[in-house]
Image (tube, rainbow, N blue to C red; front, side, top):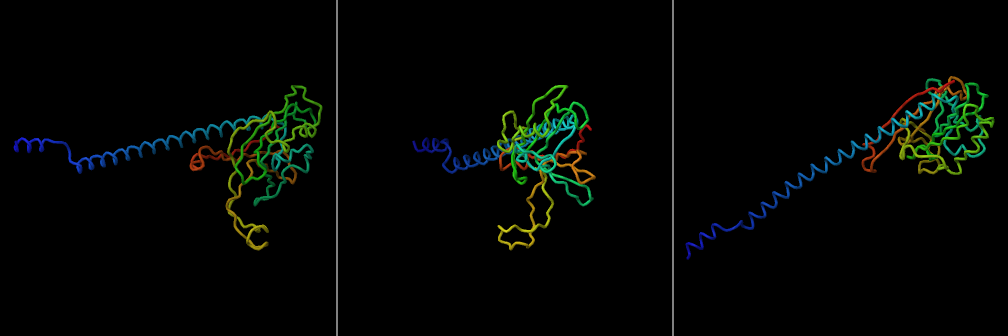
Amino acid sequence: MKTASRKAARCGGFTLVETMITVGVMVVVMAGALGIFVTGLRAMYKDMQRLATDSKLRALTLQIAKETLDSSEFYVFDDYAKLDGSVDLAADVAVLSPDVYATQVAYGDCLVLVTRINVDDNSNVRQIRIYYRDTTNPNNTAAIRYYEGTDYGSSGTTTSLTTLLNAINLSANPAITGSRILAATTRGRPMPSTTHYCPIATPTPFGSTCTHTTDYYPIFSTESATTTPTCESVAINVEVINGTTSMNQLSSSSFNYTISPRR
């Protein structure tokens, strides 16, 4: 009996220590496999967001490029709020100022494209198209919206451009009926680190200098050799951001494109 009992004991199951070791090894293996799986999912997610970003950028820039080349003239405004029902095409457009190369440059987050029935500046307007970010602060991320006005056909309309723009009051409602979002989260390129005068609201005494590194340009710009806006060219420099907050910087992308309208 004793011999049989000892034999049975020798042929028994795993001990508690052996079981714990086995389970521990399995946990480590499963944790490693899960880590690889999660890493793969994250990589796939980022790649998908990059593809979505590139797709939005291509669609956006191709659309603006095509319509700018089809336009007779364009106007860059600081932001959509300038279209407030009382537009002054001389005073409300973005102000041109000289850059380091003495070229006159103006920046803005609202681009108005005007197509006339011919290149004559006084000819009838056929259509107005507007691209704008729905923020008045260029440092904020915001959506790019697109508004397409009525197409008046080959004969155009005798209504003045100012009157037509005043009927599009974006200041009252940037999500105006007929507009749509082209990209949900965008911003311009960052400004270089430069020295500014600190505002009164900061702890630094007013008049002291401080360095800002988080300011951003508006996404549209135009430049001219003169001191008045002459529709020479328009540049788009925009960053489209996709993905969650923790990953959006990895799935963002910039595009800088210069186009000239039909004259």
